[in-house]
Image (cartoon, rainbow, N blue to C red; front, top):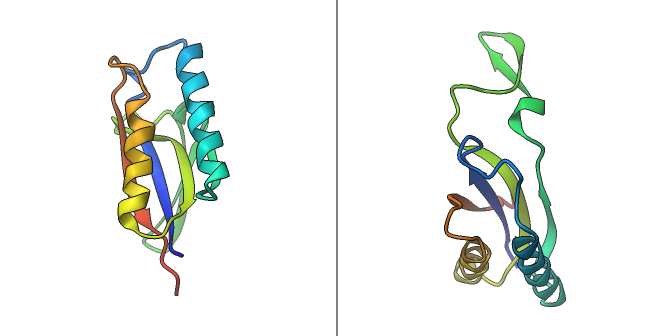
Length: 118
């Protein structure tokens, strides 16, 4: 079965400073449990703010590093889910369910990509 990576993108400047509500975390926990029992979810996690990250770039034969925050980025990857689904349609349904458990004041985008199995 193919594996898919859902990269959850958020705008850190528009996300609630206090983070997710207790109710959202409860709904998220229930969905994660359901996905785990269904054998779909392989791994998931939230990421620390971009201010705590470092970018490493290879360009022109040289490495460079840049510490966060990354002011040129409006959206950052705030979390991920690694899933194994029968097809893209099933993976997309799980992503849609994850996005719709958020309250209306959130702006959350998920980029769904199949993992290349070379």
